[in-house]
Image 1: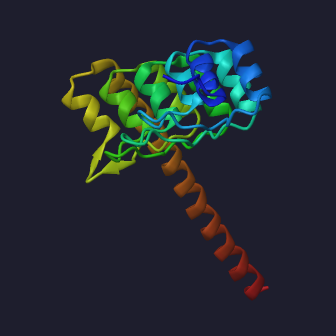
Image 2: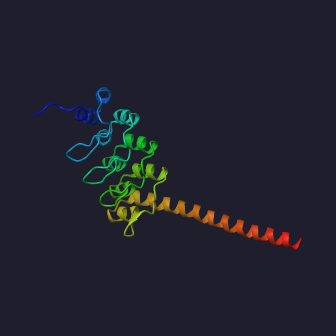
Image 3: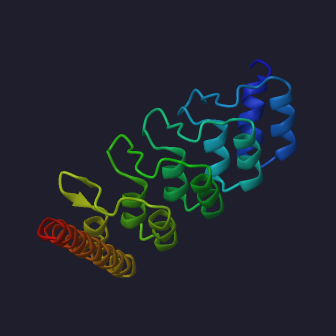
Length: 193
């Protein structure tokens, strides 16, 4: 077997959380988004899979693609963080602007993965960042996935969140209706004056 390439060194350093190794490989010209030939995982995905926050931060600082997806599964780096429960990296990816609605090969969003796996913390973080509670596949939403799996805690959380969002929509609708009526009244008053 031949010598390990600088790209492979970057990948394995990221996977093992070796920040010095990540920095050295990048300084030697490693491709920050080199896809591993086996599954297409990038060094960032390798770091996220093991929740190595410092390695992930070094890769993001070097310009790693936060939207890279695995070749076979289509799972985004954010989706991978959710599926594997990499909480520290999840928060960093959210701050880096990772796509909350990135769909994998099965068309699941990160929130759907969190609901199906009963990962309450991950669901809370995704919704706080603005994930779409109503995103669906053929009418099946995150809430439905939690219900099928009988994940009561996350189901209750999603129901409360859905109720909270509905209240905001109702308040916004009322405010809009009130503004329209007021505008009509002002126009009528100006016409009559």
